[in-house]
Each structure stands twice: as C-alpha cells, then as structure tokens.
Image (cartoon, rainbow, N blue to C red; front, side, top):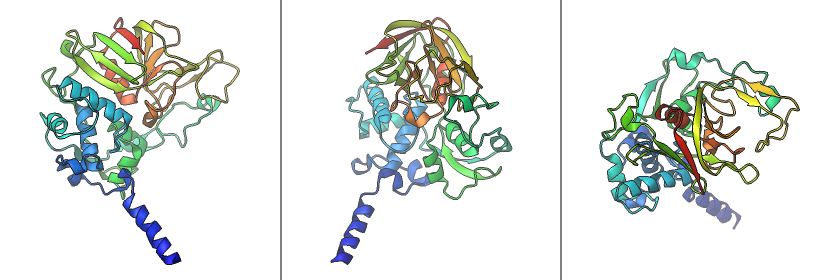
Length: 335
C-alpha cells in the first residue's frame, strides 16, 4: 500500500509539471505552429511573447509563461487587428502575429569580451544606506546583463542554456531575437522618426499599462507597468513630461513615503546610476513633484508589485519609451 502511495504521488508530480518545467529548445520554439492543444505550451507562448515584443506590445519579461502582462498585450494586439479581444492565444492571433516575421525567434549569440568585462557587483543591497556606498548599481554578472539585454527572464536564459558558462567570452548561447518590426512606421533598425513619435501617453491604473499614441491616434506601443499603491497613489488627470534623464542617480529623500522600504535612513542620500538603481536606467520626469516614469532593478515584478506613486517599467521598455517621447508630451492617468 505504501509503495502504491509513493508511486501515485510520483505520477502526480510528473503529470502536473508546470509549463516552465517542460522541455524547451531553440528548434521547438522556432518551428512552433499553432495547435489548440498546445496553445498554453511553453514553446508557443514563448514564440508569441517574442512576436508581441517585436511589434511593441510588450509582454514585459519574456519567460514562456502566459501571465497577466502577456494576456493584456495580446488582448490589445487582438483589438487593434480586428480579432476578438480575449487575451488568449488563438489561430487568428498567432497568424497575425507571425505576419512580417520569419519563424526564427530564438537565435545563437556568442558572448563577447565586452559582455563579461563588467563592472559588476557581487550583490545588490536592499538597504538604501548600503546602496549609497556603491560606485555604481551594476549588474551582478554577465548572466543578469544578458537576460536584460534580450528581454528575458534569467530562469528562461538558464533553461535554454543549461550547460553554458556565461562568464566566458566566446561561449555560444541561445537568446531571443527581439528586433522590431515596424509595419510601415519605419524600416527595421531605423531610429524613431516623426511617424512613430509619441503624441500622447495614457497610463491605465486599473489595467496596469502604459500606452503610447501617435499623432493620428494609432497605438505605437503598449508596456506593462507598476502604477502606485493604495498608500502612494499615482496622480490623476493630465500631466506632462518635463525632463528625460538617461543613467539617472536616485536621490533619496527621507520625507517621502517609499513603498516597501523598511530600513529608511534619516538623512538624504544619493544612489549612483546603473541598471540595478531603484529607478532603473531612465527617469522621465513629470510636471508633478517627485512623480515620473522610470525603470526598475526587478523587471520580473513589473505589473505585479506596488510603487511609490510613480510608473515603473522594465529597463528595456523605458529605454525604448525615452526614444519615442520628448519634453512636453502629455501623460494622462486614467482609472
């Protein structure tokens, strides 16, 4: 009886493996075609996430798991393309996503000497006073840097490259191919032009998204976002962009309420720039004191956690946004 119980428990573990534990490789993803029974499988979801990212319907961190951010991005894509907006992957949505794209969404990349050079930090402090002691809020190593460069979850990067030495130049790894397909707005690889410049930004608090609209009212980009909290709500109504700072410092002010910060120093402090800075790699200041749109040191939490009133995006999304906007662009907050 005990042996049967152990066997049955083992069977349950095997048949209920989460999506992230299923086999996944480059060929399986690149050749994935839509099948209803595989619509929730990691290969198809991963391919859809990369295709959404290419078309500026950002799923946030690409991880091969269909979460809220992926469903919101897919729902917006469906609505913009005359498909029933369910947020669920279906044949029509997958076919439309695949238009203008090759089937190759994962590629091989050779780690360069620049990738492994650093500077890096051994550990990112959680204490503000300890952060302020660092010369730079750098990545913790090549693995974290490469994951962010290719918009990937670190676990996905490791899963696709289980034997890789990310610290060794010349190592060949599998990564996402996230170059954009502009669909007539601009040629692939071009710098943003007036055709894809932002005319207005809408921050939807309930949906937890930031949408970028052009002069014609067309959606240019959609990004998942963390937007304020009950204690520190984001502003209401219309604001405007007053400054765009790349590689910002974070100036800690003890008078401000900070979501989730327990060990708060009594005096003002400055945390140096870097991808693990609390405001990430870009700060887009609004015409309301202390409010802005910025990056984050924890991209996997975007849309899932709380902020101190600001709008938080992944570093790669806010870097892209910074190229689409300019001073004076209105930012409208909606419930």
